[in-house]
Every structure is written in structure tokens, then in C-alpha cells.
Amino acid sequence: MAGISDRSFRRLCRSFGADFAVSEMVSAKGLVYGDRKSRILLAPDASDKPHWVQLFGSEPEIIREAAQIAMAAGADLIDINMGCPVRKVVKTGAGAALLQEPQRAAKIMQALDRSPTVPYTIKVRTGWDHETFVLNNFIEMAAKFNAKALICHPRSAKMMFSGKADWEQLFLAAEKASLPIIGSGDITDTETAKNYLAHPALSGIMLGRGTYGRPWFFREIKELLENGKNWLPDSGLKRETIFKHGELLKEEYGEKHSLLIYRKHLAWYIKGIPGAAAFRKKIFTLTDHTAIADTVNELFHKPAINHF
Image (cartoon, rainbow, N blue to C red; front, side, top):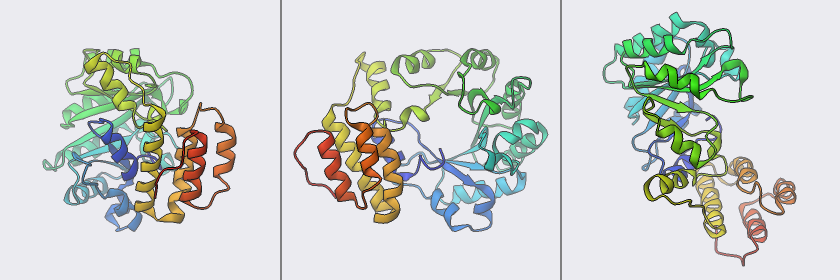
């Protein structure tokens, strides 16, 4: 998730039981041509094992070379994004644009298959729009070119994030697949996660927007699956997690830049808490982590604690 699943957020998710945590989208061309920001996005954390790096691009040989660079830098698995519907990605011929060019998508998979030391997965949507359902075709190509798995968000690219993900459509395709299929989309509660994980055609689920402001969602799911418990974090753990996230961001980006990212996450963390609307307005006027921490303490009606 571009702008979300950086090392700081991945560390939090892993601490709450995420089995894998995929990097932000990294430009294949950026890696090959030595772009500094792309290299930074590639960097793993000690807790980021297995390290799963997501690349985007449209040129088969560039993607193959970028995947090799990522593996040399510590990646254990490569994911190729063929489903991102965001315009700035699509206009480069990458992401969901590849759903309209299955031959190019096949050449990308074929190029990766020629590098047996690069294990890879494919991330797709069901098609470009309602009239073009290409999921079955992409599953067949991924299997032919030895992808380790295919992850599908069962919406069309044109839907963006509107409407509902069509999981029944995904189940039907997965039942015929000869490689592992992982489902993603609209998983925001533990019962839904449990039901999808129980489906025999799926090998797993991938969480996205359901983790915004909720990195503990993984523990919620595992408590239900393993212990039959409806677990929720108390206010103390929520506050502790918020502060930990701030510390990680500050360590990663420095005081000034980290604040821009932290504010975005804070707006998600406090969703539904009494006083959240006033808090959101206030945090965008604050200029340092200490002031934010004091405001968080006020919101949770707790005495101040040591932080930062």
C-alpha cells in the first residue's frame, strides 16, 4: 500500500501477528536506474522476514532486473502489481493497465520464470471493467510461468474502491486454479476473515484498508481462530501502539517528515473515539511529537506517560 505499508507500519503489523507484510509499491524502473527513493523503499527491517517486496512496471526485462536487485538487497519474495487502479500508475502502463494487455503481462511472468532464483507472486483485480473478466486467464498464465501464488482483489479496476468486492466470483475462479490463490478486499471484521479463510479454494487472505489505524487486526483474527475469543485491544494498548508508531516513524524519517505521515495514521487510529473530530483538527496545528503525544493523552483521559 503506497504511503501506508512502510517499514514502521509493517513492524507494527508483524508484532500483532501478521505472517507476511508486503512492502509499498516500488518502481521497477526506479530500482534499475538507481533512484534513491526506490532503494529506500526496498530496505528491509530485521523483523521483516520473509521480506516480500512489491514491484510495479510494464517492461518485462526491467522488471526481471529489478526483481534481481531486490533479491540481492534482501528480498525473499517478489510481488508484481498488476491490479493498482490509481491513474498515475495506470498511465505508465503498469498496475491495472496490464489487465488490458494480457500478452505483456504474460511476457513479464515469462521473464521472471527465466530467473529461477526469483520466487514471485502476482497481484491482480478481476478485470479492467465489468465487461472484461480476465481473472481465469491470469491464473492460468501465473501457473504456466511458475508464480508461487496469485493474489486477487475481486473488483474491476474501474470500480477503484467503490461497491463491493465480489468474493463469489473469486471463489469460482480459485476452485479451478492449480496454484495458491489469496483473496483481498473488504475484510474489515474478524468473522468475515474467518469465513474467507475457511473456504477450501483459498490459501489465505491479504488485509489492506482494514488495517488502517488498526495494526492489531491480525491479533483479533488469530485470537478468534486459535482461541475462539473476540479479542479487542484496551485503551492502554491502543495508546501504547499509537506512541510506538510515532517513535518508529520518527526513527525512520526524522522529526519533520515523520509528522506528515504520523498525522495521517492518527486520524485513522482515533476514528470512533469520543472527541475524535476535534482531535483531528487539532493535530494538524501541532508541530512536534511531544505536543501530539500530550494531545493523545488528553483524548484517552489518562495521565501523561513518558514518550519520545
